[in-house]
Image 1 (tube, rainbow, N blue to C red):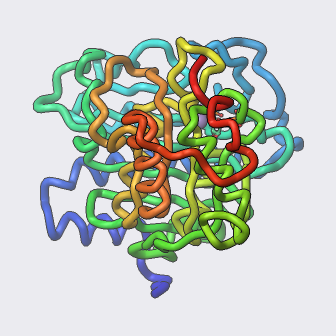
Image 2: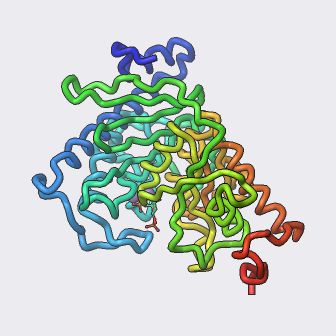
Image 3: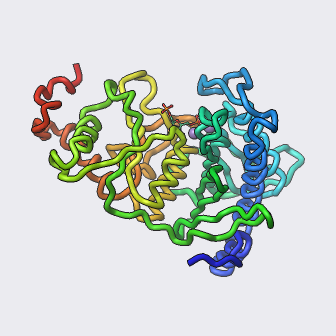
Length: 356
Ligand code: AHG
Ligand code: MN
Ligand code: MN
């Protein structure tokens, strides 16, 4: 139920009253929310702000940065580094972990973020977002790269901002997933979507089908069955959406159900997926699990993946629990060689999908 008095600050004060240890974390989240408001204001100016277009430099991922990737990254660092809660940060846009300036007070939290997600959409006024994950260290010594390499189950908070027709902050501190909408008149985030629950049943899938020739057989099987709709084994029709902004996709899915997939594919064997584990997959996985959904690599729970590097890529399958579990089962059956050839004419030749 919407309560127009429940601002983000009040919500956090309530959380602190349950667990006083959340005081520093809450201060950090207020800084994150302020950075989100700064980014939201810049994005809202669109072409009038002079921020659109390419920055004409590549980031560590080999992707050409947009001006707004750089500006959003700077806004996040600037807003969050002075609060005294952080031991270090990791950003999609920075090759190395960011060190808090030596003269500055440090805390024990680690902030990992994708400052602008879906940035290919920025120049066209399509929804983009920010994703963040927060881990905690034992002490407030300067963070080493190793300190960041913790399984997603260790996240103490995670969230995303979506910059759409309205700006929203969707947050979890491990006690449910809650959505706040920015009231631009007062500058407050208001709790508008408390305790979000992902519908279990769904008929909507999200995947970039232009990659279908590179998919592994379990993914090809799942999508083929969805496409067969009421004429196939699923016995009902499906719908499809692909915005190319993970934040927008996940936001739709947590509110009305569905499954999102950016699976492993064979395009570039050095990349086991498109999305990054530490600041895209893990925070989304925590939000989705806290909303009653499930997040997987296809071959295991996302939040239990042991990270090996801060910019590591990973296959992502998340959303309504039953659908994600079905995709996991298809991987299991394929790996065990127990999947049966499909009735569909598409799969008349199962060998089409076997590894050569
Ligand atoms: P980013 O803009 O941070 O690099 O992330 C974009 C991601 C994600 O938001 C989206 O799901 C996916 O890339 C889209 O990839 P394709 O263009 O391959 O569909
Ligand atoms: Mn991204
Ligand atoms: Mn990004």
